[in-house]
Image (cartoon, rainbow, N blue to C red; front, top):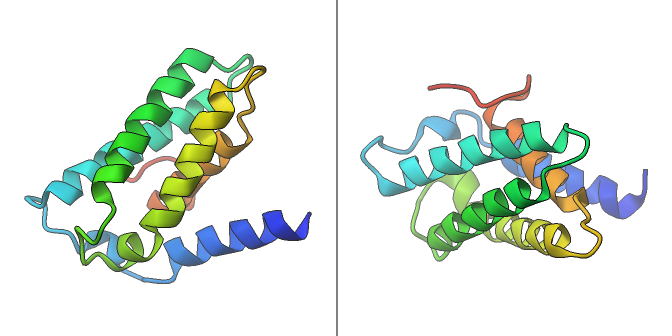
Length: 132
């Protein structure tokens, strides 16, 4: 595995896994809570899409655009959630790379796979979004 890729995976995994119990620290009436659930659901959809051949490019791009919009709204210290506060800017950068890759001609879904993998890793290490 290339060192840069290994480092990226380690950083994402560390950000998601280092704060035990953090996923349940948002009150359900907090707008960030529903935005995170929307992102998690989209991440699950994107993960499923990335496993199809051929990938439905329009669907992938639509999901990534929605994820980017939500991620923009989560930036700037809107939450005290430890994992989210520490990693939202990096996640935003990954979503932008994924969107640009999906828009490219020909499309490149490498970063889309990373984005979906990061969502699945944080929300359910066994795969799929955990229902809380």
